[in-house]
Length: 78
Length: 247
Image (cartoon, rainbow over all chains, first blue to last red; front, side, top):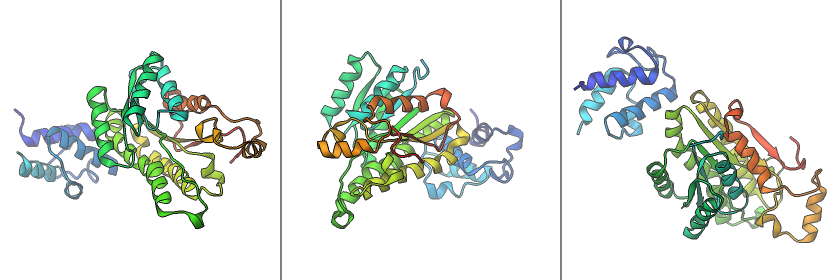
């Protein structure tokens, strides 16, 4: 069973079309991984599906790095 | 057939242009979900598709109601798959001189003709962005470009639709989704059959081709835009009006 961190990183790599090794915890989706605004929306949708949760827009806006995504999922796991 | 297996959602498909569009897409192999405002309308869409040997069904939808939109989208996903093609066709008129126009005549036309485009397009985009393919086609009107006295509400909604198509085309182009509008002129439907002989002859004088258009002539353009060969057309408004207004 993969950890939440591994699952988040896998989704980020797939969604943004980058290598998994580039997806470090501190990486910013826009600045480091080349995401545009639509990519970040799609990334949140992919996280919602993977973790079967709904991320409200105001929360989604605060998720800008890999670590922030991991933190969000960790604190909202059912 | 070029649309084989793709799910197409057509609003306002119980008669006129919407019905012709539903059948033209189905003839290309699409699974068509046509919507109507009543259960009997939805039933009639389903029966006509079946009678023509096409795949698809009819569903009841109130395009002004977000809950109704969500419900229909869930049903489509459960019964078929997420729509790859959306045709925003549902529309109404409530003509009046602006000085006499009632708030509800304005609000109803804007919500049904333009608010619907916002609600439906938003609802189908998740599926389309995931699929990296989609077609959103809005049925506008020649009135959006040329204006028409007594139709400030309708013209505003239709021109709004064309601006919406251009903005969204920019947003989602990178995902293989095209967003276009088709602007019909006077088409032979219940709406134009209600005109008297005098109104009719005045109207025909303005049309170089000297006749009304057929719903099938709009549907053919929509079917083309929905297909693979139209993949490089986005943010466009295609006029189909017999030459009555040349932009």
